[in-house]
Image (tube, rainbow, N blue to C red; front, side):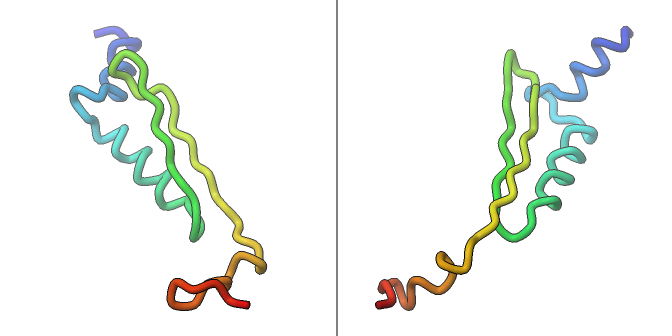
Length: 71
């Protein structure tokens, strides 16, 4: 089996490998409080995993109490 085929099998969406799961888990663990993990797929292959951490500013924290905007 060629190295290229092994690599493709590791990132296939048809048969999820432990390698792929490990990379997704690592990406999720790297999110610090607020953020997202985006998984890009092309031709049934995961081609990119993007981690995005979001820093909330103090002006966004505590703006709402019980669903109501604070004055």
